[in-house]
Image (tube, rainbow, N blue to C red; front, top):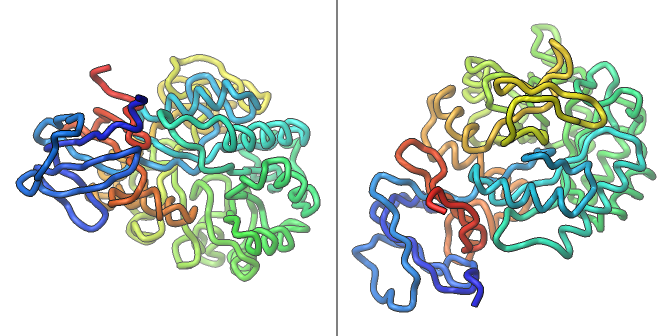
Length: 396
């Protein structure tokens, strides 16, 4: 019998369930789903269960969902291979990530098409319950502004084009869930309206949009901001820009890279106080060098130097990150002074709700997938379960 179909029970520890915090808790799991939760004092029959004892002082939280990740452990979505997505899916539970959006980047249209086709086929045919689940694809670029390219190769940037997007959507087996674009460019409004009609998240970044242009984009369906502060118009007293819109407009969910490098800790604190855990989403935007040592790595055909947690194209251009979700989870609590419940909301609940998968992901609740992370007393990942199967354990 495969372990995902066994009855498993986590016992002891503090569980941060959907609507309550339970000390000295138990969680029953059957066939990959959560069937019962409660305090150990209320536990009746456990004879059929494989029991996993959780040490006192440890916390049990829902699996984290990374909606913006390019790569990890030597693999990248743009590699367009099953092996690359296998590596990402098997590596991410180490950092508490149990599901994610495989994220593309600006490259030659044929390379994007190959990556989308590969990811779509993988999602439909090659997912493993013992690994992090790919919930869909985040298309970042090529519909972005050349003056805000960042690490996206400028020579492959295109104006938003609805016919091209429709072709890519079909190639992906309709698995594109989020699109980052510059809505002020020709064709941007048309693409946003199509995304809205298709139930796909429309996001802004790598953009020169003014505040008024963001308001127009919201009318067309924009409802998300990609990596707040990075490669976008900043806050100015005569034009609030994209950052001002992120602060002020409740229609927008806002992702942020909390590594202390992309956004200084004090600015993370400022953003959190303005946006709050109601609209903020933690992401990594990590590239293939995550979980690897310092060195030179490829990103979209460009060489990126990774040293001491910085990933740089040159002295001044950040090229994604090597941030792990477990560290974003710790950092937001340190930088913004928020509690673990707020961090759970930003790492699990908000992305699940935004992707419309909260019926099965994003919280510890009866009937949901047993995507569960156990944190030790230092808030580090002790164990990760994907659909009830142990995907990572410090003791393994």
